[in-house]
Length: 388
Image 1 (cartoon, one colour):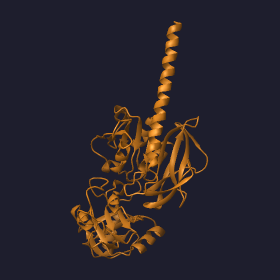
Image 2: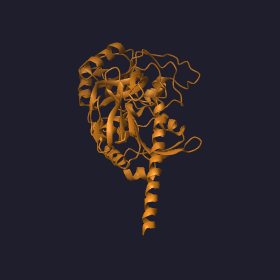
Image 3: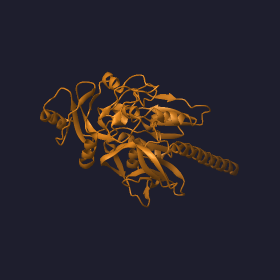
Image 4: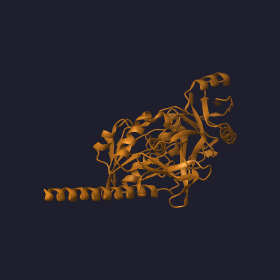
């Protein structure tokens, strides 16, 4: 394994034979590796696991976040020789091999993680065929960087589909799939939401065609600064007063739609143990993260936008990175919001699951406001006709 600055590690093949390239990032989660592997947000990234022992619970068909493994490569120190779990159906090594994912084991992942923390996330190559580090390095330097990459189209659904509400239907939500994880529509449907999942290339007309009570942008890979179409769609939706909820990439695009910039973090946040404060409640949540970019918005005060007043609602307590945004009207009523982390994290923690309830409350209040406005218009029209 060769990093783009020339640092080289040697180990044993883990998964498929061959060669792979991507951005080297590390994840601090000690569990949930299957959800990590199948998260579309990891497209074109080589994931280094900081937990030394990986694969002990094997792989199954129930915990997938999508229908395939998305990581470009996988780096572990001590893979389990034999999985031991009643739900296990196959080994992690076999799954990586079957899906053509090149990995490496026996690597000092502690040293590698320290290196990435000091130097930052960078391109990397893993090869079971190339024995010359300099030759592999030359190919690493030719690989595409993550900055400037527009990747959501590559991981999105090609066709719209519907996830029905569980029990009585309360709301309809249009979900823009930018790298959607399976647990997101599941958590919505459990709250009586009929979920219409749309391709990343959808237009505002496609959104309005499902007559939604709200709009949702999912997580996803790539550089938010390289995305324009989805930002324009969101701005049109905000202009129409449609309630919005965004997660991860959806938070970054929300920031851009409101006029804020985005920037690349040195080595990102990835894992399931990141502390975040919800400023609206004052509570600290332990949260799951997977992002290499962040929104550049002022932590204090508010910003007036064409769609309302924006504020930072959540902050990471490790480094003060913006972890959430809120948009309110001039009277202080919530119109839209987003978070940078993952309240839908299937492997946990589940501290932030309440955000889906906040979304349903937002749609309910928006529906009540629309009804009151329509009633006022009807009353006014009736009075005008009576005057004639």
